[in-house]
Length: 514
Image (cartoon, helix red, strand yellow):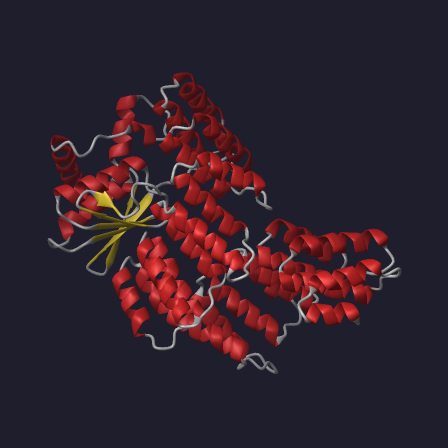
C-alpha cells in the first residue's frame, strides 16, 4: 500500500526505500515499483528490478510485469532490450496477451519500427480499444497517415469495439491534417505545406510536429526554431518527436550552442528522457560543426550502443574536417554493423585521399574489391514529373526516347560549367573499380544529371525542376547541381534519402553537408 501511495504521489525514491526495507517482497510489490519506474521513464531501474525478480524466483513473472518493463523501454526507444523481452514473452506464452502486445507495438512504433509494430498488432488474437488507438497513433507518429485512416475504417467495421473514443479520433484528425501538409512537403513545395498549416485553426501537437519535420527535411532551421517558440506560446508542450526535429534542424545548420540549449531544455524544462534518436541528433550537431572528438565522447558516454547513422555521421564529418584517426574508428564499426554498405569504403577512401595517405586509399579499395560479393548494389534511379507524366532515369540510362537530346544537353552543361570554373568532376565518388577515364564517364551519367538535363529541356524558364532520387545524392552530382543552378539561373530541388536539397544561384540549402 505504501509503495503504491508514494508512486501515485510521484515520490518514486520514497517508494523504493519502502520496497528495499521489505523482508518479503510479493508479486504485487514488485509489479508496483516496476510500474512506478516505467511511468517515470527510468528504464534502467525497471529492468534491474525485473532481472532481480527473476533471479529470486519466488514470484512468477506475469504479463503485467513484462508490459510495465516494455513501457519503460518505449520511453527510451530501446529496441534491442524490447526485442529481448519480446522473445521472453514468446518463450513464456505471453506474446498474445493484450497488455504485452499493446506495449510491444507501442515501443516498436516509438522507435520507428512500425512494420514490426504492425506484425505484433496483426498477431494479437484479441485487441482492446487501447490497442487500436495505440496502433493508429503509432502510424500517425511515423507519418503513415493513409494507413492510419485505413486502420480506423477497419476498426469501425469491427463489431463490439468503441472506436469513437477521444484518443482514436485525435489520431485520425491528426492523420487527415498531417496527410495534406506532409504531402506538399514531400513533393518539395514547402511554402504550400506551411500555408496549409497556417490556415488550420485547430493545430494539435501532431500537426505541429509534421510541420517541424517538414522544415527540418528542407533545411529550414531558422523556421523550425521560430515555430518552436510560437508553439510554446500557444500553451502546447513539446514531446520527444518535437525535439527530434528541432535538434535535427540545429544539426543541418551547425548550431552547436542552440542544439545544446534545446537538449538541456528537453530534460530540465520539459522533463523528457532523451532516447537514442535524440542522442543521434546531438552527435550530428557536434560532428557537422567539426567537434568530432566531442561527438565521439558523447557516443561513448551515452546510455545506448552507437547506431549505424551515428557512425555514418561521424565518418562523414571526419572526411570533411580531416580527422583520419577517428574516421578509421567510425569506418571499423560500420564495417561490422553494415558490411555490405559500399558508401563506407568510399568515404574512408576519400578521407585518406584528402590527407594524402595513399597507402590507406589503396588498402581501402582493395578491401572494397575483396568484399564485392556482399555489397548492396542498388542502382541509382531519379525521376522527374513533366506534364503529369513521370520520367524515370537509371544511372547510365539509354532507353529514354529522347536520350540522344538529353546527352547533348549534358555535354553542353558540362562544357559550360567547366568553362566558367564552377564545376570539376570528382572521380572519387564513383564506386566502380575501373580506370580513371571510365570512372569519369560513369560519373557523368548518374541518374540525377540526366534528370536535370531533361527538366531543363522540357520545362519553361523560371519553373523549378523537382527531382526525386532513391539513393543519397553523391558529392559530385551535388556540385554539378549547384553549378547548373548558377549557370542556368534555375531553382533545382532534389529529394534524396536524407533530405530536400534546394539549389539556387550556386548554393544549396544543406550548406554542403548532408
